[in-house]
Image (cartoon, rainbow, N blue to C red):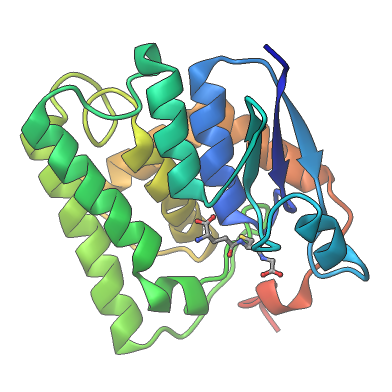
Length: 221
Ligand SMILES: N[C@@H](CCC(=O)N[C@@H](CS)C(=O)NCC(=O)O)C(=O)O
């Protein structure tokens, strides 16, 4: 079996890359990272050489190029069942798939107003009502997952799953932009910040040199 490769963007700025990377890390498979810095001259051509979307992440495994973070998580869940990237219980799995899809296809205000910038600290933006509503929805969703399905461990469904891969980059945004959280949401953010894979990703992001100005919002003037 050839070593898998994961094509990703800047660790500082690419939340979708982080999602696939967290899932792949969790399988404990050995893999090679191919980092393609985004928004620099020629980057699109480099991405198009890996997948027809010209976007990251792309997983190259078993002669396949699998694009899109959620498709990658699904593939890894099938290929590494022992990693339990979905809960085993049908009801928990249905809910985990629902909240993962909700993140994958939704939360436009969080994505627009809180650009992912995991090495930044102390950023503040004047959020819209839509942003506030979405933050409230994320907190409600985390609380429900933890209360109904989280008894077996600290993650949304107890053990680490694809749902955590989807929401850890959201939790990191809450840290970057100083979002006020309490209860379950605050506990979840604290837990994820101590998680070795998250620390490894953020530490690597801090070493990157590239700056994407559009994602550097909320600095003190
Ligand atoms: N739905 C895709 C989104 C992928 C995506 O938008 N990736 C961004 C980086 S986070 C990208 O490749 N941007 C480069 C570009 O659009 O040129 C997924 O889940 O993987």
